[in-house]
Length: 110
Length: 114
Image (cartoon, rainbow over all chains, first blue to last red; front, side):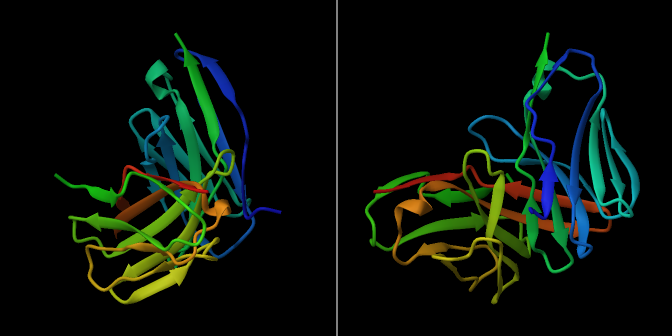
């Protein structure tokens, strides 16, 4: 079993929809939680970073962490065609080791 | 301009021929890391470095070496490349301050081992 499992997708939504992307993890040593966006043929771009349970908001993006359930989510409000990309969750230990989910490809249709 | 540079961007080589992929950052970040990305597998961490002369194995270190002799550079060395190391490689650097993380990825190096 993988240490980080990500909902596989692909996901296709109409413009303006709320998108929910989800990951679960198994290792309690994981302390830091990230979401990345990756456009085709580009490097990943860090969207959200947090280390505590609860919600963190940045514009149309909200990252949610539930450490008791080992579950993290990324919500995108008012989704736009420009949000079409692959989204990756990643979780770090305190020592800097990173484990990524396999990614969810999102398409937002105009 | 803040950036992470990788060289080369594209490389075709043959099995067993040693190669080095360079990574350099201009932001004075302490943390640097190498990843490989294969279709359907997300990113997998190869090695990471918390600071100069401090390196640690990620999830897939076999067949790779790294060094961190100075803060800005973190080269990835393949001593004897094999076809299963054909992949897209990314280098990244980052700094954490409280609940904020600043991270940059390089543009990627596409490697084909014949």
